[in-house]
Every structure is written in C-alpha cells, then in structure tokens.
Image (cartoon, rainbow, N blue to C red):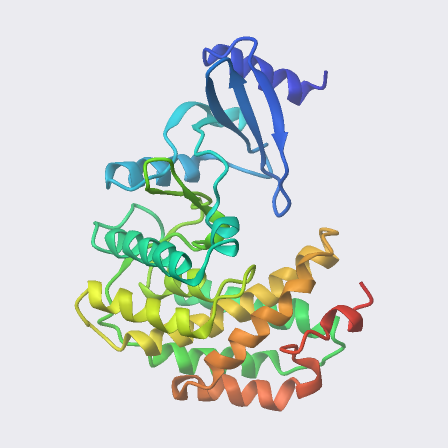
Length: 328
C-alpha cells in the first residue's frame, strides 16, 4: 500500500467508514482524483486533492456558501484539508450530459430550463466571498489562445495587438452589469440530476465574482456537447425572463463567449501538449464553431479583425480538420 493509499484509508476510517470499499472513479483533466466509498447501504464520494498540486479549501468554501444559499452542492461529510482529502455526499450517477444526450427534444429543453433557473437563483443571492473576475484575469485567460494554439499551428501572431483588441472590447462592457457568483465550469458534465428532482452542482472550486453572462455561456456554448442554436436562443430568453434587464445582456453574452472560447481552445492544446491528454484537441472544432458565432457580434469587431489578420481561415476549425492537422 502506497503512502497516499494509507492516508486515504486512515481518513476514511476516521470519518466513520471503517472497512468501507473505496473504488476509483475515472477522471482526466486535473490532479484531483475521486473515489466512491461504499459501506453496506450508504455511499459517499472521496475527493483526493493532493498537495501541493491541489488545495481543497476553495472547494470547501464555495460548497458551504452554496449550501447556505439553498443550492445543491454536495454536503461535506468530513475533511482533512491539510492532507487534501474530503468526504462528500454522493449525488449518484445521473449526469445531465448523458441524460440529455439520450433524451428527446422536449426533455432536453426542460432539463436545460431547470439549469437556467438554478443559475438565475444563484444570481439573486449575495455573492460569495471569493476574488473578482478582474481585467487581468480575463486577459490572462484570453492569452492562452496565443500562447498555446498559435504556436501549435505554426502561427507567428501579434500578441500585443490581441491584448489591445481585448482591452477595447472589455472596455465597452456596461459597468452597471450586476456582480454575481460565477462558478466558471457550469456545464452538462458538472450538473447531476438527483433522485428528488433537483440538480446538484460540482466543480466550482474556481468560483469568482463576475458577470452573469459567463456561466450561461459555459452552459449553452458547451465545449463537450452540441447545444443546438435554437435551444441556446430559447435558454437565453428563459434567463432574461427571470431577472430584470439591467444591461445589454446579449452583448455581454457574446463578448464573454468569445473570451471563454478562445481560452478553452488554448487550454485544450495545453492539456494535449503539456499534460499528454490527446482527446482534448478533438473537441476544439466545436469550440471554434461557437467562437465564430460570437465574433459576428458588433461589440467584438476589434477582436474579430485581429483574428482575420492573424489566423487564416484554413487554420480555424469549424469543419473539424484540426485532429488530422495535429497528427493526433
């Protein structure tokens, strides 16, 4: 038994689950690992967030905030943050992703509408005590495109002009936009469908205070599954009907959509090249398709012009050619 396995066993036993079966749940994109803990008629989830690579304290903080606000984060059953171990309520196996993939259009619509209602409820609550989504953060994320995607394509681009274009676009956002808690990874693979009809939230440890449009983009311009443009438009209308129109929401939606999609394209290349995870570039064509739709919005003209000047059409991937070009 390795030292880490011994840590896990002692933690589980001390939490009152002596002798419980601990079995790994497959994961991919981080150093965190998850295990299902089973003892007779009860189950739990073990998060293994090994230091120094991971720190479970932000997760614990946001989970407790969400619970206090009446939203369904997994209950914390036990934790040893110093050793990076957390025992959580088990939400089961019904992810939104697989459920809507197998559903008819009416059921898919209803499931997304419920996720929109959850998001609107979060946006009506007091914000969490987490850092803000600052200009520096937006720029650092957007720069992942020029730092990772462009070199992978053999492109020598004007990164300084790229940053200036983003500054110009971000400067034009409405400062009256309300500040809300942004979970940052709110999509169909991080929403669980619970036996009581509710929806459980996962993977929110990177939450910041930012723009209401961001998590809507994360849900409706999903990098991992196709969301029909008609469903996307209907869900934007649903969200807009639930909250008062404080600002030009659709403008913010497309600006933050473009920013997020540029970031994701860079991250997916980084996951492949740095971390040896070759499945991620295969999802980039979907992300490119939504990025191209966002860039059509007039508010994104400076960024769209930069793309036109720096990234030739044949190196943009809505048609799904990227996998072959990278010789995966």
